[in-house]
Image 1 (tube, rainbow, N blue to C red):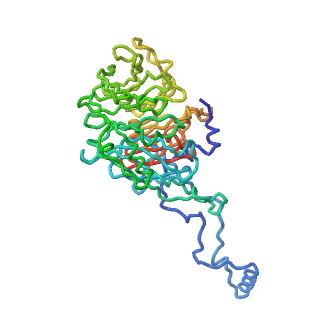
Image 2: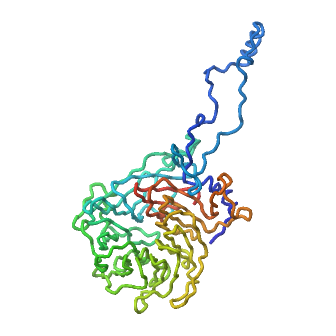
Length: 512
């Protein structure tokens, strides 16, 4: 991982006080927008000749203008900058609200939906990789948590007209003025199919990087963990086509019913789920892991004839399985985390379906989420119910039967509520995103090292007793209520999507 000092980060305009996306306290006693005093008398400016004549006239009748109206001295001081809101340090007053500082966003859009979608996944598209142009377009799949089971849906969303954020002081006459400089409302389109029961988690079939979508005749699978205890696998390809092809109609018998339902968990509800990356888009080589609240993990595979749910579970956890992640480098290895405070490592070839290594305990409370680094495959992230984030070097994890508990290579306690989602950047092996029940989405860079004079020093503008800001914390995005999941967009570098009770956010910041 590349290393950057906190001084380097500040030199890039990314110091926390500036790059915080948490917003600012609104000041009710503002001067005008450009920080100047207005002429309350609305007098016209006179020429130098008129001023000279006026002074002569005043002397003749004995009146001194300076005595009646003393000159106003112009102040060179600029109006105070908005105060960065530091969660855990500042508290909003009765009449104060958070306002985003758009100067630190390259793009920022909020979108409301009919029912909360507490889980979603980003879909790959054919619009190209490493996209930098605006307006941008993104596709995602999500499942609802409606007030009645019969009202729930699985939906494919198309976010388009994602424009660059307009900033104060932008030069509209710039030679670079084009469509990507507009600041318009984004467009949200969707196609839905009925889904019996709320969707606890949803994950789309992984597609290899830089590969086009499969042909229209080939399915694009998505799995949903329903609160009914069932795991359904759907072909969402027709929904994507209907968003892109005018007048497209699809066979509802193909989409309104699951392509396959996993009944291995009985009536046990669950949240943990992950597809293995097969390295190609062949639907006959897929593997899906699912974990339930009764501590059991099941594997479902595909064959040329269809899906095959294996009946023997993996059993080493003693409480609810909260998250699952396949190894990015070992096709038979996966990791799991649980409410039993542990992280377990498994090999599907092992006899007895027991874990081969573990971190016990990994956190002092439930381990809610994990993420396996796809670039540096020995690094694993974990997020706990106590709000802690830890980075593990799996080379230090001992095989089962040993009593040595490894120490994390990094540990952070910034969030003040349970970590709800965590994910490594798809290409930068030192950067990750996290979300918490404290309504924060945070971006981190392990490559940032503190300067010697900054270690343990709180922010200069924070009050006494303020929390230390970790130098690895690049950005704090706020404004959503009860954030549940966060994902990087794999084809729009630096773009982050999040979902909460009040809808979706998609943003890109100058910090990443």
